[in-house]
Amino acid sequence: MKTLNRRQFLKAGLLTAASLSIPARSWAQVEGSNNAIRAAVIGFNGRGANHIEGLTKLGKSVRIVALCDVDQHVLDGGVGSLAKRDVKVEAYRDIRKLLENKDIDVVTIATPNHWHALAAIWSIQAGKDVYVEKPVSHNVSEGRRIVEAARKYNRIVQAGTQSRSSTGLQEAVQWVQAGNLGKIILARGLCYKRRPSIGKVSAAQPIPASVDYDLWCGPAPKEELMRKKLHYDWHWVWPTGNGDLGNQGIHEMDKGRWFLGEQALSPRIFSIGGRFGYVDDGQTPNTMIVYHAYEKAPLIFEVRGLPTKKGAPDKDMDKLKGASVGNIVECENGYVVIPNYSTAIVYDKAGTETKRFKGRSDDTGHYGNFIDAVRSRRHEDLNADISEGHLSSALCHTGNISYRLGRKTSPDEIREKIKGEHDASETFGRMAEHLQLNEVDLASDNAALGEMLKMDPHTERFPGNHEANKHLTRDYRKPFVVPEKV
Image (cartoon, rainbow, N blue to C red):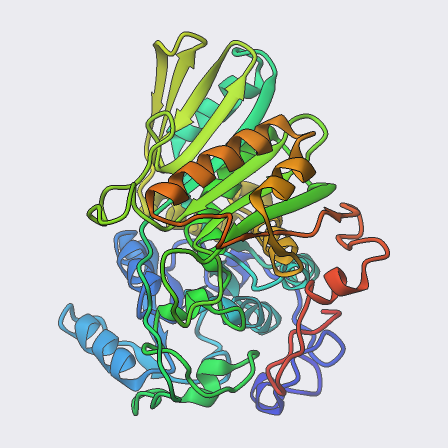
């Protein structure tokens, strides 16, 4: 640290590369390789609770020393729960205060999506290693900024796509990429997961008294709460969430890209979808197709939030070749179904099972991989380095951008527009049948046909498309600004 110490710097709220200089360090230089790594969990009203459990299961190699949440009720509960296990932690509501603590080595981040990137970048610039939940970003630019910060400051940054630590899936990917089923023809991700209405309000709702709403909003606009619940339902509005494509679907998007072996964004993208079956305060589609036109083979993603048919129990969700939330990798000589986070089942062209991969997939293994890399100081040792998390998250974001720039279109016109893409046409046909069983008639309740977008994978921008490029980032609310340069 030079003339500006960390406390002064963070209070100023201006975490930039120009004003903070943290030298690269090895683990042995700071703590000694035999000492416990000191961790803080930021945001634990949902997925963050799993972070606490996962880190705890790593035993004496990791010690949770701090918790941070903007909801005082959640914070008190977390501190109290750990106290019952004789684990004493410091409590913070403001991440900036937490980052002043030089005794914290790593942070894990499970805030709402709109906070992921800024929390990660601030933590990196404060000298912490980072585990950040999926999607790692709220928009494309944010993800790239995290990657740049991780490399500049020599920080270890793991994305929360835990399937990457499944030994069974690691073996399956290697086996398919070795050509054992011939060339990959198509990779498909599925997120058939019930999402009921979040309700409709006619007036602004009160903010829970326990929540610091200014901190909760952070980089997002500080607007009136126009939905029944502040927590969780932020997933279904654009200022804070990315829909189920960026919520559950990011896992399957990541696995699809992993099997394809693609290490860049797709050069062409379009989407089809809408929010069907109810009218509520949600904005993101509950039914969606995203088509990524990679040169070697397309990556298609499907979201369905409605059940098998109108009136069916919520648990009754469609399946495609045995998977509801998972992947199907079509190859020349058969296909692979990945129905969960840890299993891959190989079938021949006749549909007969010929091989099965299954191995460790528990979250603890993913946290353990992160901690191992923190000790080795090699980001190459990570199963889900931030660069992987960025690309897979960005594929979700570009699909959403296409959707948001689209317009409601008759099913016949949609069929005409996509007739050159056989797999997309087949997927749309099944989507229409699914909606019809849920008493949604696309002839009267049109789906949106997203804009056909072209992406430059090297610059991660849409050439000559000003409107699309605006969605690559956002207008930030000071002082919660993700820097354009880290």
